[in-house]
Image (cartoon, rainbow, N blue to C red; front, side, top):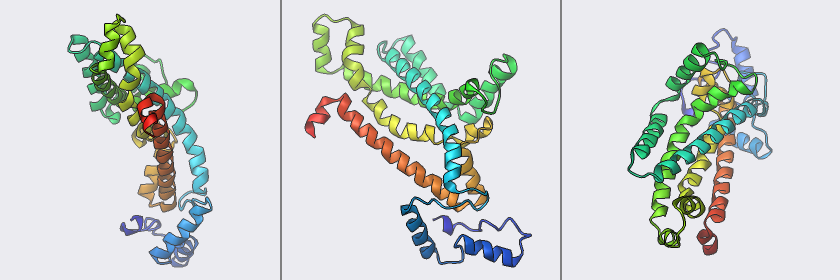
Length: 280
């Protein structure tokens, strides 16, 4: 599909002599039919070779190795932030259903979902960097520099997790075994945290698979705002540069990562819900 897009990777470099352009096309097999290019790429992929960038003097593997570590650190911090605060907010709202506390918590979750990163990021920089001077505005150079990007990236996911946790917990609290637990005289705190939370968080577990992949593989908007040289930054730069090997390599890497995380989610189902494990 990338080959169907108009233009080529060297069209912007108009000063290239014709012989140089032909040599470059031969080097990257661009002079071959698309089907043959595809077969050559798949053969190299089987051997673990993701190719070489057309714009940078690096292999795709080197680019991924350099940028993925940065994206992982920001993404994991955002994931911890989103999961911890999202679950706490969802459980808090569900245990106070239809009260002002419930409405306030869900309004905050909706705010997190609704405000885009390109608005929230500059807003956080303006407040915490320029006004209060607590955190640096950009670049990755120390743990404190990860906080604002992680908060910007994680707030949207926190809102979704909070709403999923609330709905899942409310549904679980209506189950017969919860009524039995209450009939035994257990306190509401024991009913919620000891009996309802584990199954009530199943929708959150389902969501965490693709969410983790999205967070860890980088966000172009957040990485651009905070000048972070992560995987998302290189992914979008490869689109504008028509750097097909980098674009394809990052997509393959993301697909493998997503499949692995979904497998972990399936395993987690069996651990959290014994009924699913017994059916197998």
